[in-house]
Image (cartoon, rainbow, N blue to C red; front, side, top):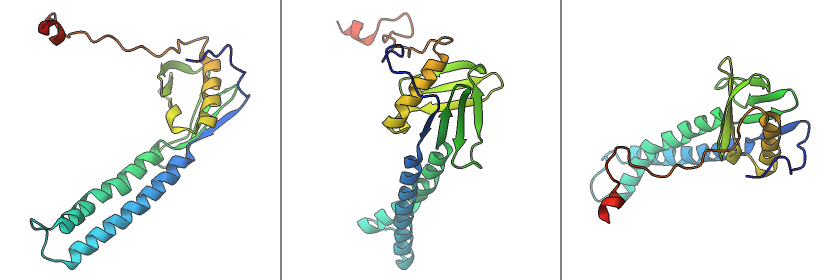
Length: 183
């Protein structure tokens, strides 16, 4: 992990957005809708149903059944976690793209009671149950790095930001592990 003390100071206001995820989800939904419509049209024109040995009919049936999951559910989930994060000297706020699916959240740095710091993201929780989730991997690198530095510099004096290392695999009971039994 890069040390914050040796890094250049973050800007006063950092803005990061994952709008590219929403654009990808829109393309995904559009392509999935076309596959679903083609599958339903094929099945509708051939009233026989799906029989063994008809690979095109089987593919059409799979397209008609699984496309709604991929062209409705996944884009909706993407919208739930998409938005803009703005961090400044006062605190951090999350402005969602789909306000009906998720509400605007703001936490001052003093309100942050608990931090779950992970390699791919962070969760900041306030005393009143407010929670802001930051996924560094879903942000463009040019925006993720300044946001991460701003958050680190704001809370590093109050929280331990070292992600927990992986624990060595230990048997759950007092019995020896499989590797030990094989020796």
